[in-house]
Image (cartoon, rainbow, N blue to C red; front, side, top):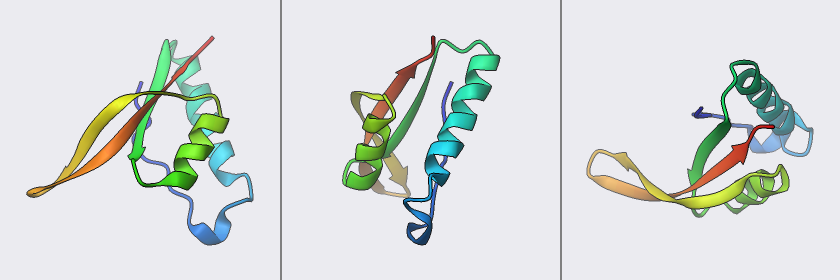
Length: 82
């Protein structure tokens, strides 16, 4: 199951909002009996990368996010649900 969008404005970083949003998404996926969840983040977004890795997500590859004729490198992360 894909987690398509989670954004926390910088002024709210460090308040556990991102963790609560991610936990809610993971709980929903688990209740729907998804085997895993996955998401992408911009490959240059170091704070998000550190956050997802700290939450137990594993790097599994790369893809590109396209806007018109531009492509932006994104990292792909996955979390296996127990």
